[in-house]
Image 1 (cartoon, rainbow, N blue to C red):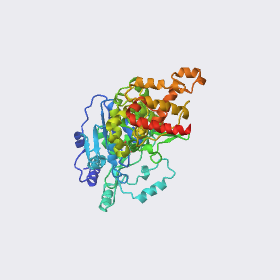
Image 2 (cartoon, rainbow, N blue to C red):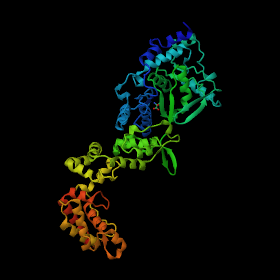
Image 3 (cartoon, rainbow, N blue to C red):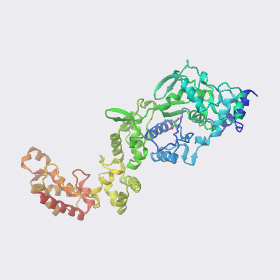
Image 4 (cartoon, rainbow, N blue to C red):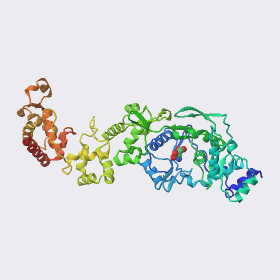
Length: 553
Ligand code: GLU
């Protein structure tokens, strides 16, 4: 037995498997040519961040457009940073926004797929098997340096360009088997370090699918692979995982770019086929004329729970994410109005290098469009689910009469040009407030040519002729019929030609009625509103308005 082999046995006496065992357990996937395997591998350190959802979407689409595999891996090797419920927050967040995984973690205690376990803390034996193999090959070694010694190294390196455990600073790199054994017998703790074969003179090049060609200095640092408790660092764990899970594309945040030379080296040292990288720039936000990163601390919209609480439907958020993921999405959407999002030919190469800009107004616009094409039943169902959790008053209103609620939501829906009043479910209480006496707030402010005196005349006449059995044409004819007796014209053109001759036109007459019935000057179709309010409420509201304007006039 060589010294390296003896050392491997000394360090990992309980590890009996070999890398080959795992290679056989997790065979090549046998997917069709060009199919990509991509993952989302967050650490369960808190809520799901909008940037995470964005990156996960990119990674998922990258797999889907090639009929590949998208999986979720939980990277929980840093137990200090883990928060309770962190895994559920990720899984629920992905589910809510319609991101489905083909494989991987599906809950805090569940997963699916043949390449698991997909949670790093359950893979200790796998990492140690590969670590043992590196030791056996002389490619990794135990380091006994204490925190104080590492601090001394840091101090001694103040003037060095390359800082870290390397070259002459790597004190434990060349310890003999006997020295190591003596340390271990003395009960000294050890970490396992990579024996880097890098040379500071060498540069490595790689092609990032988003950023293009990148050239960097080769890694020379003997990084820690396993910590003193035998738990791997992210660098080591992800290399083993991405290989054994047969990942082809690593799509992740660009804070990892600096680590790519190390990661490429790890892949090579471990004898793995390299993956392709796509590093995603952070989401930006405009502020005070400049740009800054969307911030977990400052921006409520950075947490995906914000969209859930505000009631942005999943479809809207997904559609919006696509608009900022690929610049050609909006053109595609115009040409394919009814297509499913999954039909979009997503391309990592079309992602922004400088960082996509988050724009709330744009999200609102996108969402209004999306909601305007939904049926009333769907708007009702989704907003009712939302209301049960976040707005019990709205849920109670709905429950009083669900058919009425659906009819209210159906006003102007299904038209060629549906109205775009609702961007999120939390807009609904205000949007429908005048359709319920509980929430109707009278407001008698008039616009256009209407005056209180005209309003009294219009409303008194309207009150006498309004008939809820009228169809829309008959109803509108009646509105026109009260124009002349009130000194207005039913013809807007005529009014424009000779404004002095009239007190107003049919639009002003409608406004008076609209304001009396709804407290607003802009609403969806007034005929439908009138029909749904019913005779009693219509007359009550008209009487209230006549009283108000009578006192004003
Ligand atoms: N667990 C890493 C993080 O949360 C993910 C890095 C990766 O996707 O490879 O930052």
